[in-house]
Image 1 (cartoon, one colour):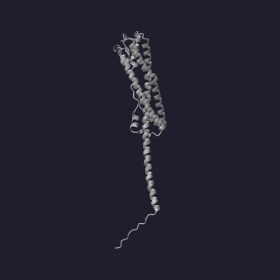
Image 2: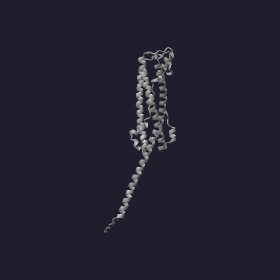
Image 3: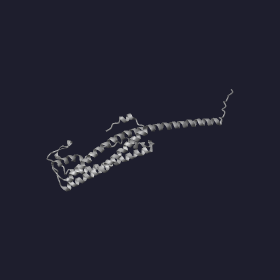
Image 4: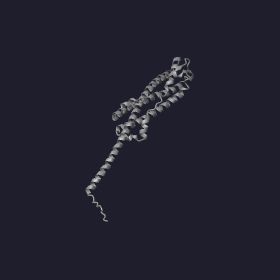
Length: 251
């Protein structure tokens, strides 16, 4: 029986070149397609982060406005209190007024600037997604200044705590007939009118007042402007969804 063998002709070098080019093109296109897909995924993730940050900043502006209102009212009450203490003229009306002011001069406003998105961006390394370097720097600066503001507010709160401790030797709580409404009994008396005690209390209140007027309030005002600037940059850079903005819950 005769067996016929099929002969294989060797490929020409042009065929090898063509196959190599086609294989290289396929691999390259696959690489670029995957790279483009990852780029789109990261771009979408970046916008989601920035939308979330935008919503946080809107809440922050409301919080910062509330701080300014609260602290401005409090510094005005501190001014009046210090005037009464320096005058050191005590009659039923001035004593009752001082008692009412005492309820407000060392109070604190508890607040927390939004950290939802900042925590995600820091922990997940999300800041690498922000390609605009100016914007990235502004965001980082905002976080640093938020921490600074929190630290100084804690310092002022400590001053208020020490002033409240001192007030317990001056004001008798039994004369507050309705603390929630600031109602003081007509026969209210100070526990002491000792010059040394009242002067020390005045000094503590002045320290609070000056710290709020000269540092805390200006710092809050500057931080509010940073938040507004960031909101503008984010909206311009990412063309954020207006409908989402309207749905943001402002506290």
